[in-house]
Amino acid sequence: MLHTGGTLMMRGGDLTPLRPDVYTSDLLTELPVLDRIADIETRILFNLDSSDMQPHHWVELAAAVHGALDERLPGGGLAFDGVVVLHGTDTMAYTAGALAFLLPGLDRPVVFTGAQRPLAEVRTDARSNLVDACHLATMDIPEVGIAFNARLFRGCRAKKVDAWGLAAFDSPTCPPLVTLGVTVERGAHILPARSRAAFDPRIEAKVLAVRVFPGLDPSLLLGALRVGVRGLLLEGFGSGNLPRLENSLIPVIEAALARDVPVVIVSQCMRGAVDLSRYEGGSAAQGAGAISAGTMTAQAALAKLMIALGRAGEGRRLDAAKRAFAETWAGEV
Ligand code: ASP
Image (tube, rainbow, N blue to C red; front, side, top):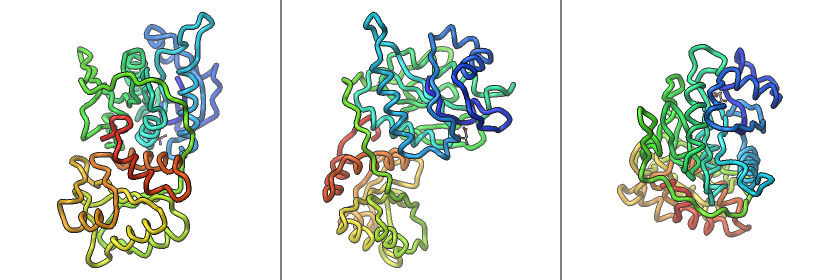
C-alpha cells in the first residue's frame, strides 16, 4: 500500500507528516479487517493534498509501483500480488491515467482509492473503499483502476464527477471493470496481463489544456505558444467543435503545428466521442492538423500527451503525438 496523501488519512482536516509505523498501526486499529484480506506492507511516498500532485510525482509513484512489482521474496517468489495507492480524490483520475500509460506492461492490479471523508470519522466512506481496494488488489485484474463506492473503474477512463457525494467517480464511456455487490461482477473487458516492460520516466509537463468557450481570445493561445508550450489540449464543444468564424481557433492550430506543437482535441461532454468530421468547426480543425482524442477523457489525454512528448526528440513532437493517439496503450479509448 503506497500512500500519497488525500483526505483518507487526514485528521481534523490536517495534512501532518506521517511515519510508516504510526501510519500502519493507525490503519490497522481503525480497520483490523484489512489483516484478513492480505499481508499488507505500507510505504509512504508523499503526504499531499492531491491538488499539489505534479507530473514528477506521477513518475515517482509509477517508479515505486514498477519497483514493487519487481520485488521478490528470499525464496524467489513475487513479493506482492498487487498494489493499492491511497490518493486524494481531486486529481486521482489524472494520476491513475498517467500510471496506466507509464506502466504499459502490467501483470497485476494497481488499485487507487481514497475517500470523501477521513478514515478516523465515524461516518466515512474510507473503510469500505479501503476494504474494496485491498480485496481488488488480490484479484487477477492487471489494470490501473480506481476503487470507489463499490466499483472499480479503469483509471484512464475515470473522472471525479461529484465533489460532495460518496459516488465520487464514474467512467461514463466505459463500464466498471468490477462491480462489488452481493457478488463480484467482473467486466468482460478487463485487459489480459501484459508482459512487463522497462520503465520510462520521461514526461513533458509544458502542456497547456484549455476548455474552449464562447469569446476565447485566440491571441491568448498564440501568446502561450510564444512562451514555450510544447503541446496543446483543447476541450472542444460537443463532438470536438471549435469556433472558426469570429475568434477562430484555426490559426492557433496552424501556428502550433508550425512550431512542432501538437494540438489534441477532447470533448467537454461527459459522454460520446470526438468526431471532427461532423461539423465545419471540427473539420477545419482536422484540416489544419488537430488530432482527435476520440472518447478519451481530458485527464487521460493530458497525461498521454505529456508522456508521448516526453519520449519525443526535438522536432519530432507532432509525429510522436499523432502516433500515440492513433494507438491504444491501456484501454483508454
Ligand atoms: N483535496 C483532497 C485531495 O484531493 C480531497 C480528497 O482527498 O478527497 O487530496
